[in-house]
Amino acid sequence: MVAIGASNLSRGLPRLAAAVRARVAAPTILAAAGHGRSYGANSRVAWRRLPSILGSGLWRALDRFELPVSSGRPLALLTDIGNDLLYGFSVSQTAGWVRSCLTRLADRGSRVAMTGLPLASVARAGPVRYRLLKTVFVPGCPLDLVHLKAAAADLDAAVRELAIEHGAELIEQPGAWYGFDSIHVRRRRLDDLWARSCQVWGLPEPARFTRGSLGEWARIGSRAAEVRSLAGRMRFTRQPVVRWPDGGTLNLY
Image 1 (spheres, one colour):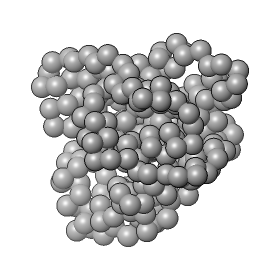
Image 2 (cartoon, one colour):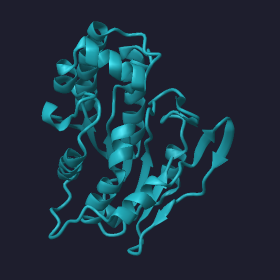
Image 3 (cartoon, helix red, strand yellow):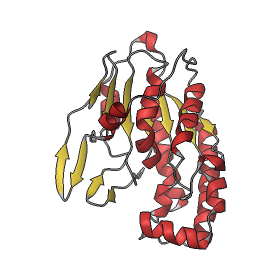
Image 4 (cartoon, helix red, strand yellow):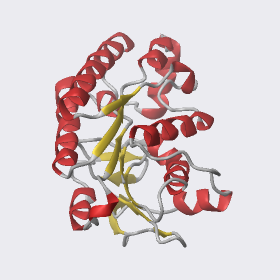
């Protein structure tokens, strides 16, 4: 299973892993996530830098896996689409990067679920809230609120067209899923998002499901991507970063 996103995926990765493991025996999960992650540009949060999703080792790693015929199609999720607008990239550039991801996944026969932009949540944001959020998360954002809302609507329309073009299924995200900052899914709603993804993939409902222990959350949250830069120094982490007792693995890129 391939999971691509930014902060919501990073925050919810332990829950997503638990949801998949409850439905699939010994899954191999490859994730490209991280706060502020960009689809097509290198990104930085504080002293940590990550390569773009398109430039990450995810694709090289995916090609190394030889799937048995009985395993069916690889599963994929694209979410957190829209960060690049906050970095000042255009709608067409951002949509082009998403298209490239979808094309690569299609070339590998993946069954894709993807989310649109949280327009209902973004629509609730006013000038004061937006100024605060921009100061905290993306102080360099060149867009004012009016232009951001327009760009988000245009990108959402482009994403919907891409979903149709590539045979991906779009997951709608109600505004109630999102909290004060308009861009982060409430933690208790992340389970709804992952459950919907599993439905799109055609995975069976589990007889029993638990979100995982605090220890598992800390274990996954403390693991690092294959390549990252910390305070200007390149760091490399051998993958997979997690091996579960049932034989499943988690790989971060």
